Amino acid sequence: MMKLYWAPRTRSLRALWVLEEGVPYERVRLDLSAGEQKSPAFRAINPMAKVTALTDGTLAVAESGAICAYVAEAHPEAGLAPPVGDPARGRYLQWPFFSPGCVEPAYLTKSANVQVRPEAAGFGEFDRVFDVLEGAVAKSPLSAWRAVLGGRRHDRVRSPFRNRYL
Ligand SMILES: N[C@@H](CCC(=O)N[C@@H](CS)C(=O)NCC(=O)O)C(=O)O
Image (cartoon, rainbow, N blue to C red; front, side, top):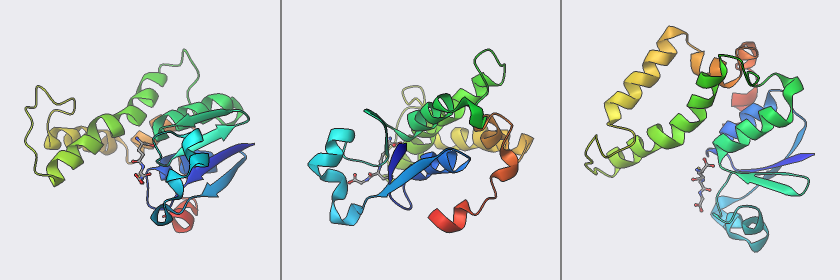
């Protein structure tokens, strides 16, 4: 059985959400304020000492986007991702990379008031990131998640998930 190491109000929510869409798994909650993410036992799973991480038998995967992709591939019967060869797969792969690659550095540089040349920054500039995101969402309110979930499970995104984990 897959085990997800998580903590509330963190990036682990991405992986938790995908698992909640219909894959059997076990949750292991870490207390970040107590430093449980820095324990030797957890560092053996994720040497970055950060949530989130997933184990599946003897293998371990870290990085929330990678975990989402791993879960979808390990459980094709759950219909979480467009199969290889499906034209929807391109957009499906785009969004898990867009968050750590564009959204997070855009927020971080803005909140730290750091100026970067748009040509040098992978995310360009803050407003461009959110224009692109809003454009995708405007096409269809759930388009990003539709992409992530392969257009099949979007009817379930308003599940009790929010109340349980946010
Ligand atoms: N790129 C990683 C980010 C992991 C990350 O930054 N985790 C934070 C919570 S959102 C964390 O564990 N912070 C606790 C610490 O650094 O001690 C992912 O997407 O999984």
